Image (cartoon, rainbow, N blue to C red):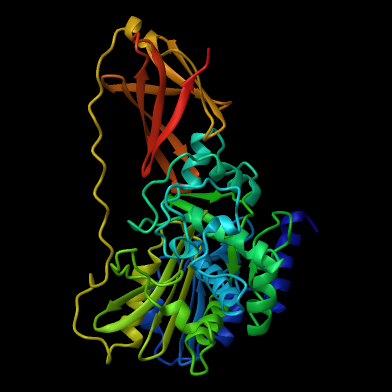
Length: 487
């Protein structure tokens, strides 16, 4: 028997023994009788050679429907089922928030704590960052997902919580004073994972397993903190450019849970949803669902790791996730008690809109009239791109040299090449630097965190004598990162 035959036999055995397969799905998960309209929503994935999605729906804790569509792994042709394990990205954040809330109820920490009580390595900023700022995304912390690429380390480079803490301990400034504005922060939740570890004596993975996953029977769930670990029934993430150009997304080295990295199933997500919102509500329920505010009292529209919203007249609680070719959503319709969990291994899947369409079907008699676009997120306005300027080689030569940032612990080297200015960030490939104004430049770099190309700007400063002395670097919300010229 050759290797392909062995693979086919293994796949058949996996299906026969209940390991995430479409045969199992068809036999066991058609709880409802009116399933075709829901299946039609996933028809574009429900075919050979396509990544896909898993869906689970419950009402007041009772399952209504669950099924898989498409394939968990295209190399071997393993189909997706309700027990397929997905990376659910930022859906993880509500589990971090729940862990913090448990420790708060036990008196082991307070959301009014200055974060430096737990992480004294962080700078002593003019205004203290409190744990409530972090859990509600009002901390002002720079995003490590931007800082590490700017330091010349892409997201395939192994990383740890200690390295993230070290990076943040070098930041001289915040994006804004804590509590003054709201800005989604992955950094805050990575640091909260470290707070959990120091307050409880357990890693986030250990705490979540002992206090959440095991008690709730979430047997397919774990915090991904060991890239060498075997994860049965794991779905591989894919990005697609078109039906003929589907690419695997590797994330094996990124094994630090906090802002994401929960691996779970749609059925496990509904177990959690039923526990948190069920009739016997846990003590953390009121804490988790209390809406956060800015320091001036302005409501944020989100609670602890959860968004508070409304869809066609019904209150909703949800969070989405996007990570490494995977997309997900867990949504709760409060009054009818309907939970919807969707996880996909297609990086372009619009899981939030899929959840609304599933709700249209199961809550058709309870939803207020509304069009298909109700609840749709608005696109953020595109940042205007400054027009490039023409500069002579002798003018560009002024900016050549090496510059060091203590905040990034990185050296940027500028050189004149073929009459243009190029930049090397540590050992990365050279990048073209484009002049856009007086002492102002722009360059672009590939950033896996945002699945594309990200722009950065450079504002050079000069000494009293007019010589180039350094610059400030900015990308997105992260601005004012200081570099000094090396002599």
